[in-house]
Length: 422
Ligand code: ASP
Ligand code: MG
Image 1 (cartoon, rainbow, N blue to C red):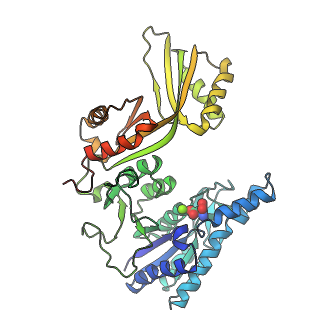
Image 2 (spheres, protein in one colour; image 1 turned 30 degrees about the horizontal axis):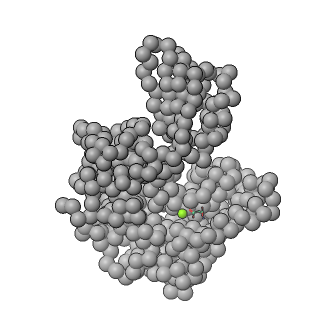
Image 3 (tube, rainbow, N blue to C red; image 1 turned 180 degrees about the vertical axis):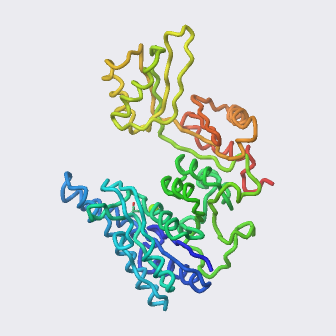
């Protein structure tokens, strides 16, 4: 007997028929003797509609009332799921965040979970009841309803899994796993059978949309094994891993590195478009300058990504180049232009429309030459590299957006990730 959290995203509960289909997945696990806690999102599109109504009502609304409205989407699906399960003869009941309780701070609209008291869930699970918990919401110390920020129900699911000591947290979505790269760009992309938390964290923050980055961080910290799988699958199909490796999930398992026998040097290639590049030339090479430059951007809440500072030839002046999302470009240029009293520079220049391509893999830690081979593979296609950054398990380059897809496909092939390559 195992204890499972089964999380269903918006497309998996888009209407009552889809909820019935999702419930059949739950029934399979219950019939197998498992204790199941379900976490649900709002029906696809419902949260957007609720947010729209709030903004219609008033642009300057109280964030606490925003949460009161927007959290309702998950309550609808939790209740419907419990009804459908009961109809199938499965003991089930719904729990709103405050009923669990899922305790959060009071940052309405972007709350963080501070604690989940598992006693009630444990008691009901022990009695064989399927607990259906609303994702995306919790309760503040004041007693008011909070929401966790868009896409937050993945994080709810992981937090619940950690709190009740679940053996696994299954994230049911509209794709059947995590892929080596976006299959729409590289048709030879493959589903990964396993991926480590660290790799998943890099891939999620680099633009792979399957999991909210925060949920992966939490899963890694709490060592909650995650599975990404499709709710659209036949609920009665055999539960086997794609490579028959026996992890028992027909999707991708996100787990500790130790659970992955053969570590790939590169597990995935990611692409993020619409990256703008800004260069400050002739910046003084002395302590505090970088802090002032990036401080003036932080003051405007502009998130900076890649940063490169040159070594200065004369020990007096240097250049700094960095990237921001295209959408923040004008704001960043303005912030740096008006911040002239905090630091000086000779000139500022920049452009929108870059693409960041990254290769990710834990095997990089122990293999030399991954970066250089990546640069060679791009050179072979005549693609110019504008910026480079690396971390222990990732190498990223900024290139012109028009070569982005070509670069992804070239690297995917180069690292042996194509479907038919041995
Ligand atoms: N319903 C919420 C949203 O659309 C939370 C979620 O689905 O993850 O953002
Ligand atoms: Mg979601």
